[in-house]
Figure 1 (spheres, rainbow, N blue to C red):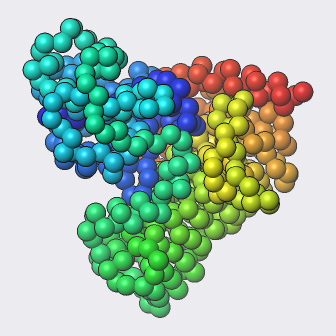
Figure 2: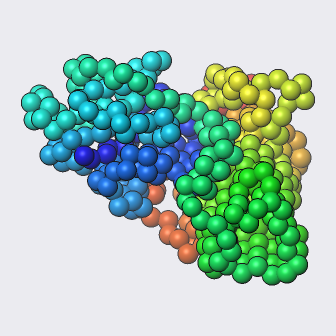
Figure 3: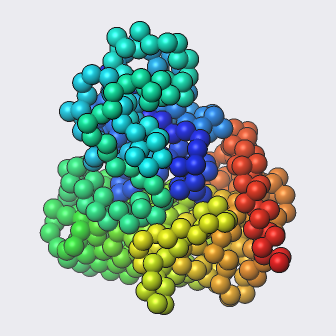
Length: 424
């Protein structure tokens, strides 16, 4: 059987913006691993292929061993087609039997479909994933059970603490294989701590695993006066600099974190080096948050937080704790203040003297003292991104530029609307 993970262009992707602008939904992390890794682990699949929006295909091929957008993968074997939004823990491998399909009861999107090889041979020609899913939706019997699916980015943040604990148990690793210098304090059980080979914990560090496990991956460096509360995962090569890491964080790889961080997810190569508070936030790659950058994650009246994902409609999150959603290559100056449920698009620049920023900042926009405008020009943004990447031994590629040009075109409408409102 071949597992085919898919992520298609459509309205459901907006719920994962701005992070999904530059990656498939199933590449988003919750806990220690990505949604896609969890689906592969859950199904036990050895033969995996994937389909992503066309503008993401070239850059995603460069970082995965799976075939990407290859129609040949839709032939020659039983197929289990799984939407990247599906919650892995709700997917039961025991459901695999005759050909069948399960659709989202709200939007009608295909969540998963099993297509037996014999039915593949007999079906009308389907030379694309979209054609195959359309055929499955109209021709196959409905599955007896429909798994839950992620709908919004902040749901991953809220689920992160529990998922960290589950992923730690699934990994089955504990103990100290790296270097720990005394004096060192561990609260909780030794079986709730794993320090990987090459990791270095300096003196005067406290790890509190009493209420959840702590996993420090390879080559992590923890500086003195850092406190880490579990559940927590720190990815390879990341550095904690006297940080107060409260519960529920997934950090890295290759991040630098100081100040206070709580129940947040930071993808690779992002910096929150200095003091300031980051709570219940999802932060993309290559983000730089200047000194004293702080987000709010709780309203003064304790009412539910709303988030604006498209520059127009406010969505009630149904929860009182949501911080910031920050896209790739966003940069915030010193003293930046982000309001509860803030949306900070990709390739944004924020400059401030201390006031709160707008709740919605579209991709490729600048916010200067709260006034939105077009960033200087794409080429300057790309040049700055390339310089930042070279500092970490990475390269800005032609494929990356093509991807970001596509993102720029996708976000023209929301940018124009945001500028109009800001100037009005």
